[in-house]
Image 1 (cartoon, rainbow, N blue to C red):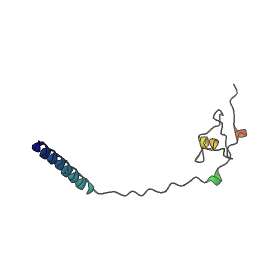
Image 2: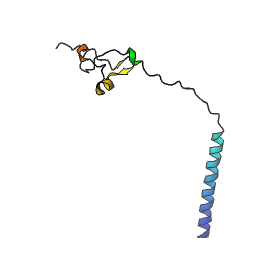
Image 3: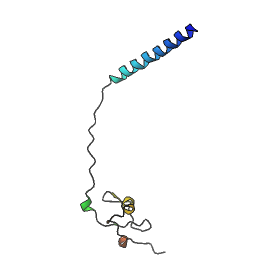
Image 4: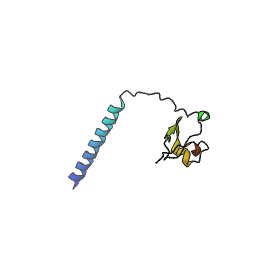
Length: 89
C-alpha cells in the first residue's frame, strides 16, 4: 500500500516536472507583436437613404458599409422603401 502511494507521488511529480519544462521551453519563443489598426467606423454622414425590402430588385445587403438588415431592424431613418424597385411578374 505504501509502495502505491509512493508510486503515485512519483508519477504526479514526473508530470509536474514535464509540464513545467514544456512551459519554460515554449515560453522562450519569440513573440511577434502585430499592430492592428483600429477599425474605423463608417462615415454615417455619407449614408443616404436606401431600400430595405428584401423582395426588391435593388436590395443591397450593404450600402456604404452599413448593414441594411441591421438598419431595418433598428428602424433606421436611412430605410426608405419608396426607393425599392419590384419585379413585374
